[in-house]
Image (cartoon, rainbow, N blue to C red):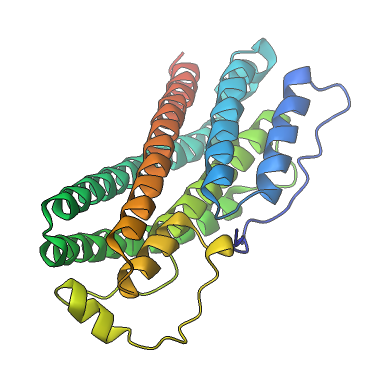
Length: 273
């Protein structure tokens, strides 16, 4: 499937030769995530899983005595507080995306119910209205997220301690992964808000409208099926496919969010002791 270009800055962590084995494992996670920011839902789920593992290992890294000494150093307090602020922003984005996933899941279930009742026009209209609201929310979230990425890059310093570099890089790659998820959920093709099945078809009447289903995401395939007035069974199949994907993404992101919280709590504990 199509892979959007990532604006994530590819930078080596440059860990010292005497670093803890966890450092190397974390670096590998970050390196893999840098090259796998992609649109396909399978890659997104894998990336979320990698982010979860990354934060689990980071939590262990924070509890190492040497790193606790670095993080609790008064001279590092401002930097640690900046990282804590960033972790709160990341949690906010996760929460917003989870809300959007929940709304998408609900609208899909409603449309499936409408199709079973034979209320196709009514169901599609309601779905497209909901889709418009979700996309508007995601668009705003994406704009703010991009600014947060830029802000994170400014936090990086060439002379950072190993633990500080890892924490900052993890924040950036976590945001990059969330951005990929946002882009996937938005889809690329404009979805009509015109009322009714037949009116959607009139709006996109051209038979020459190109669409590469094999290189499109599940969201894009559903949008296209609706715009092209596809048969009910085709749309139902797209709905069921996307519903499964959303359930998996929702479960993965909830798990990742819990790890974000644990990392934040670990940093707060170090700072307050």
